Length: 286
Image 1 (cartoon, rainbow, N blue to C red):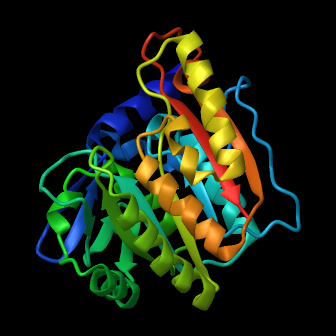
Image 2 (tube, rainbow, N blue to C red; image 1 turned 90 degrees about the vertical axis):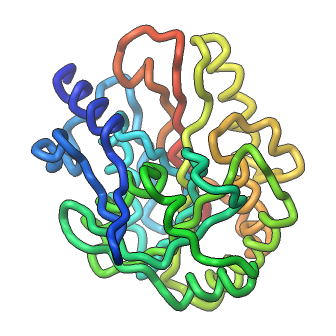
């Protein structure tokens, strides 16, 4: 297990995106020879509990980590989603980890070149969102963006014919009105396109010790349970703009149920005591 943890830490540090003329190329670097470990169901430590959904489960959205440290749980999340429903298009909202431009929101039209094949962009819905938000494409904000790149291989593996609409948003320059406008567009797409799914790519509490992480996660748990966009500051995540957009979308679609597949953190997952813990909530809304 320790060897696997080291492998996933290595993957987390080096997974990035390189822009070519017409592709976002996902680079797993020296970790690529361990790539098949991403899709193994046997690498979850005993301290991590997976709560599998029931058979009548049909989610329309979910939150999932972009840290490949917890790749086995990301895999379980995608596996549960695969068993639950058919998906043709993923709309992914990620935080903007690297502030390359001054954009508050960026969307790319490029396809994604993963180690197991190309994932196409859904140009129709990408153009629709660009037009309705009155913004221009900016693929450069996706350079090195692991909030999207970490998930693309799982999408290709479990939903090989699907396409994506990738969106990155500036977490530190929130525009609530923009989140609401984006949620209106997304809710229209989800209503019209029944095989579309919304992913919020997010990790939660960062940099705390055990006591602080537990306190923060308790507040985050409440926020996630009640989809309360007015109390979003109670959630500790790196993608609260994504959560605001999610909650507003769910309100418009009258979705009010949540399934917690897993809640854990880097200390529990690795079994190594830490003073700089990152926490994770893997959820589905239905």
